Each structure stands twice: as structure tokens, then as C-alpha cells.
Image (cartoon, rainbow, N blue to C red):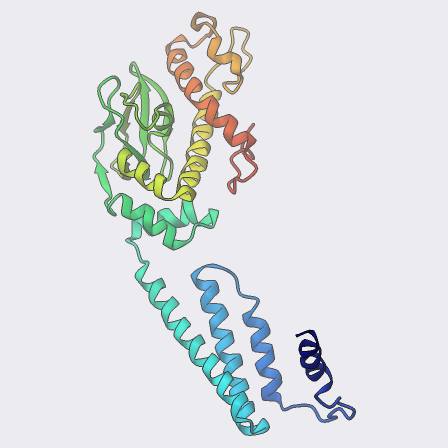
Amino acid sequence: MGSGNNTLWDTMLNGHPVCNDWKRDVEGAVYHLANIFLILGFMGGSGFYGLLYLFFFLALGFLCSSIWAWLDACAADIFSWNFTLLVISVVQIVHVAYQLRSVSFEQDFQELYARLFQQLGIPLTVYRKIVACCDGEVSTLEKDHCYAMEGKTPIEKLSILLSGRIRVTVNGEFLHHIYPYQFLDSPEWDSLRPSEEGIFQVTLRADTPCRYVGWRRKKLYLLFAKHRYISKLFSVLIGNDIAEKLISLNDKVFERDGVRYDLRLPSFCHTRLPDLEHTELAGALDLLAFRCQSEFRKCHQSSHTDISCLRRMP
């Protein structure tokens, strides 16, 4: 058995004549052009457009190789292999182009992807699952109508504002605004576990005609259970949104001596309300800070976050 293997090895190494006289003439331009196309093709990126780039240049490379094999090398086997690879590349181009065309969205969802998800490198196939979870529906909210009422509206969904402006109040006192491509109810979402229920502690009223997209809690949690990647994605987005809301409130709170109080400090949640100058806002700020701090710390400690949630910190 061992001698048989040695004989096969010797045949592979020594059974072919050594090239003593190398060919001095270079191959034609078509041969070199084929290799240039192959090099360019293997420099393609990921995603649908990266695949189109890859297979397009591979197809050009194999086409040039087929022409070279047919006209210059006159080798049927070389031509056959390159032509086969050319056909495979063309089929892949058609397949990817069809997938890219099938992943199309309405204008609102296209803008949402460009503003919020594309910068994180989220593939369109993943984004399609997210859109399907909300059934591709966009809801409207007329001016002065409420998205949620303090102490009455149950926390049943998670929504992102697409257009318009939402005013957030507590006990009739203004807290902050919510602008397009921000979550409407990220603090409420973070305050509950999947099995828990709750009601809004603030009122969200439309300052202008608004449009938003919303996901039902149960359907979204089912999506998270099936796709862990999407769950982590929303965790990052929600954490960033809560941090931004927390910062927007940070300028509203001052101590008696006029020094700005940092809501991110753990001691804020234990500060007595009368110790704050703006007592009408203190209760709501204390509540929001308590809900936000855990998510803010996760955002602060995360080393896998693609969005710069901390670069905007004061």
C-alpha cells in the first residue's frame, strides 16, 4: 500500500517533463484582459450590489478566456470550462437581479431604510423581514390628535415617526419633541419585559400631521425569537434613541445653584424631587431617567455597535 502511494506520488511529480524552454512570446491582449476582469471581480463587496459587481466582472473574464481559448489556444477543453463558468456567472447575475427587484418597498420604507438601517449595513433581505412584520402599513396621525394618553393608553407597539412632529408632555408640562426617524415609545418599550403589560406615563400629541410605522409587540417579539440578529439590531437602535431622548432632557434640569444636573448619573434617580428647581418636570424626568439608565449603560459598554450613539454625548 505504501509503495503504491509512493509510485503515484512519483508519477505526479516526475511523470511530466520539466519546462526547460519557456515560451518567450506573451499571450494576446484578450488573455490579459480576461485576468484583469477576474481580478476586478474578486474585489467585489457584499450585498446584492456587491454580488452583481462580482458576477458581472467574472462573466467578462470568462468570456474573454473563452474567446482566447477558441481563437488563440485552440483548446476545446479550456474553452469548454471557461464557457461553462461564463454561463454560471450569467445565471447568477440574473438570479441576483431578480432578487434585487423583488426586494422593493414603498417610498416611506425606502426612506426609512436609507435614514436608519442602511448606515448600519443592514441587508435588504433582513430589512424585508422587518417591514413584513408591520405588514408594510404606514399609519397617520392628524394634528392635535394623540398617539398615547398619560395613564390610559396601553403599551402595545413600537413605532418610528416618518414625518411630522410629536410633542411629549406629562401632567400638561412639555418635556421634549420627537422628530422624524426617532422612536415614539422607546422608553416604554424598554420598561417592559415581553410578558409584562403597562400604560403610558406621558402624553404624545401631534404638533403637525404625522405619519409613522408601528410594530405590534407580540409580532415583533416573535420576529426577535426567530432572528437573533434583528433582536440585537433593535436593541442598539432603541438604546441609541433612549440616550438621545435622555440628552435632550438633560439641559432642562438644574440644581438650585444653577449648575446643570446630569441625568446619566445614577444618583439622579435617588434625588428628592424638591431638590430640583423645575419641580413640574422632575417627576417625568426621574421616571424617564430610571428607565433609560440601563439601556444607556448597555449602549455605552457595547463594543459591537455600528452607530455612534456615544459620539454625540456632551
